[in-house]
Image 1 (cartoon, rainbow, N blue to C red):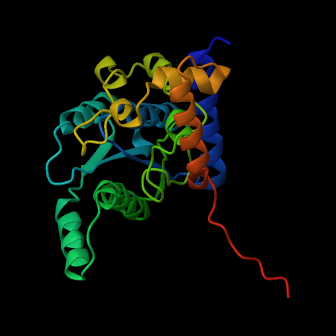
Image 2 (cartoon, helix red, strand yellow):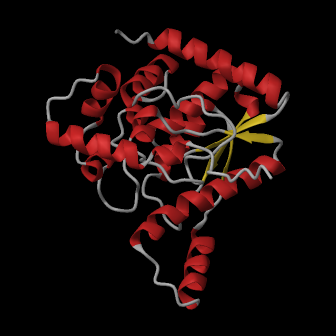
Length: 245
């Protein structure tokens, strides 16, 4: 089935407007801007839906961020209010405290702590600026759990959770997002590897598999299926015990 990016953009914009009418009349959309395609396109969708005066971008480098110029390009392109909040001191202080408590700080903790600090920052900005936090994840990443629970997987509203990476890029072109941001190779900014190098398969393979069920590489199919099953918990509310005494 061909993807109609113009129709998808129009429907998403209308959904954002309706969501804010119900859940935050007059509130601002708070978007963490990384300089990658997802946050760029999420911000552009919010501008289309609410107007640039109701979208606030938050740039959150961890000490130094090599691609912060890409994030600045996006907020300048959209003309939105934005703030730079460096989480570096907070990150380093918290890591030192954890280590001082006698806990060996793991590599996974090193990777996942910054997104969680960034989400805390977005909520602090949101509460201070009459805002609702935008989740910027897409279907392809969510499918294989490529997000941090209570980090970039959190938010108040999620306009892109059911669009694949390829579909998000197509929507970005319709929205006029600079091509350098749309085509930028996604990476976590920590490992020195691209997302695809870390995952072990391409987004093109993954997107096709999600939409059609077809994948040529059976080894990659097995890995995608395993990651999908392992990470389904990230998309659910926490398991709760319901006492019925």
